[in-house]
Amino acid sequence: MTATEAHTPTIRKAPGVPFGGEPVRRVVDVDGIPMSALLAAAPIPRGVIVALHGGATSSAYFDCPGHPRHSLIRVASALGYTIIALDRPGYGSSHPHADEIRSDDHRVELAYGAVDKLLETRSSGSGMFLFAHSVGSELAVRMAATERGHSLLGIELSGTGTEHHPDSSKAFPPNDPGARPDGSAVRELLWNPSRLYPPDIHGGRDIAARGPGYEYEVVRDWPLKNFPDLAAQIAVPVHFTVGEYERVWRNDPDARFDLGALFSASPRVVVEEQFDGGHNLSLGNTAMAYHLNVLSFIEECIDARNPGDIQ
Image (cartoon, rainbow, N blue to C red; front, side):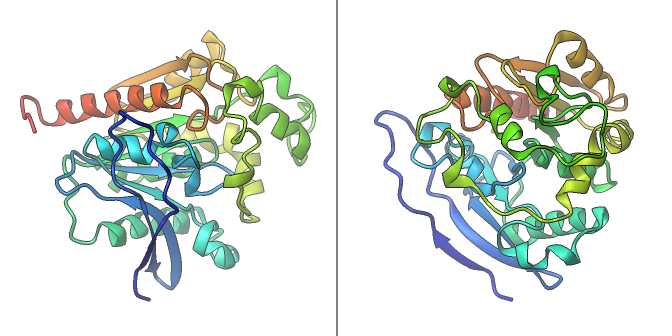
């Protein structure tokens, strides 16, 4: 299959803000599975950021429709990074093949394979960094826990955890961990307080996408069965952000300490709270602050890898 590309709809840029180029939608073939992504390639990249969206959305999560200041893709590319916002396996172009990619290892292989195809002969600069949200954190942690993951610059995780927030009891019954979450109750947790988001973004209608069937099993098994074991295998720097108003996962000081302690093999772990942030940090009114904070961490990872090398 030949790679294809088409420009995303033009979004008017805010005056005085130096945004990067328009992201391009591309589809590449990975062992017979079409994998789609939004790509913004820098001519001489500082590094490569691979962004992994959460559940029931797509790569559009990282290019907030109508709000370029909120776009991780545009802000990161303006600062010299190549960024790939991947439609995770089972989303986007690969959705019709979801039943073929239920294996955890296969999903990791598809993600790395898509990144390799999208980069082609392009430089990776100082290396690759994984930037993940919510259920996308599961894939990022699996990718980082592989042998190839040991060469990553680092990873960013948000919107996940090992214990649900007390407010989430209606969505995730504490006495029945195998029960399917209540959809309406989950949406209430994900998008409130509403003041945290632009009115036209609240609820996520414009970025919604059908998810694969396997994701229910991922959500069910992730907190206690998979996350702790995989986190202990990660040997690169970890940045973990919890929103001040996160209500799906615990975000109190004790929970933040416990989350950091999971990454026992990592040389550096930073767990921070994002002021005025909810679950969907990259879509909220503090998205710019959040993205710049993580980009600062990436710069530190690059400096640690290449001390004294000014690009």
